[in-house]
Amino acid sequence: MDKKIYLTKEGLADLQKEYDELTKVKRPELLDRVSQARNQGDLSENAEYTAARDELNFVDGRIEEIDDLLKQATLIEDTTKSGGANAVVALGSKVTVKVGKKEELFTVVGEWEADPTNKKISHESPLGKALLGKSKGEEVEVDAPAGKVVYTVVSVK
Image (cartoon, rainbow, N blue to C red; front, side):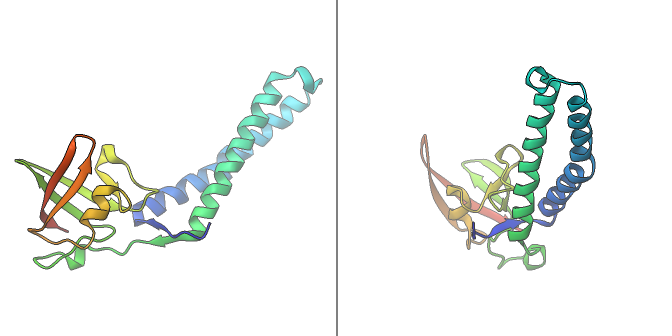
């Protein structure tokens, strides 16, 4: 994997927090559970041992995944300074768009932070790709399941 992973400051902090929680709290607790279960005797019929080992394997996999992400992470620069009449949409931008009469605010983030329910869209999503490089007043057309949708950029921060 040599693809760049783009993260906002918040996304990077959340990943670091999860990594610390897993390595300093969760993993030591699981190692203790495995050790206690192992001491209960016959491992072939020990459901607690099997469950603890499975959970430990899952946590170890997640720790490795986060470690790889953190090594490849590229911090998204704060784009708020470039806001104004000539601001263009970039990674980290907060973009207000108008669809018909409805306005919506999206934040353009890297794919690992994308969370459509919280209006965080990936720069690789159809809407994210269409918005990149656009500025206030420009229109973008995006293919949606219901057909083409036209978005007008209202503001970029």
